[in-house]
Amino acid sequence: MIRLLANVPLATKLSSVTTKSIYRFYWKGSGYVLQFTINRRWQTIRDMNTKARPEIDFDVTIYGEDWDQDSRVQAGETVGKIWGDDFQGLLRDEEGDALNRVQGLIRTVLEIRDFIGGADHN
Image (cartoon, rainbow, N blue to C red; front, side):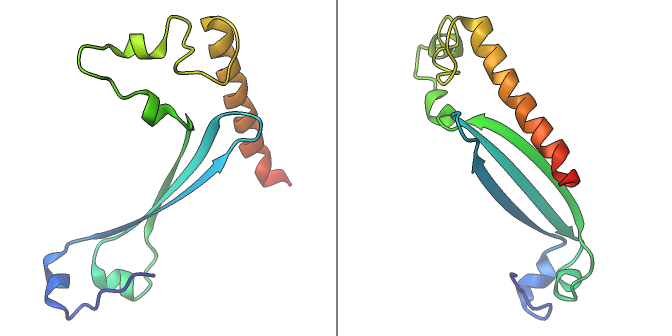
């Protein structure tokens, strides 16, 4: 836990505190990453230091492990050119034409959804 004492001059300049935790898991048998991000927010440094209950929200993100690198657009290029005619640049781990590649991505998303949805039942 990060601590910033309330009597430190910097603490009086801050109005709220947020911490972010990121957990990444590589989805087996695919090139996709499942990322969970949890944000915890306190209204004041004092609230955080006294272990007051924070506001908590989270999100779940699915992305290809190479998408950041692959989606960099060079001068004069368009995103469509980088992705390829059949999305082979974007959905490299999927096979076939654009429809098959997108269907493969959707299958993976549904598998992940079913896994997360079943996690509270196990």
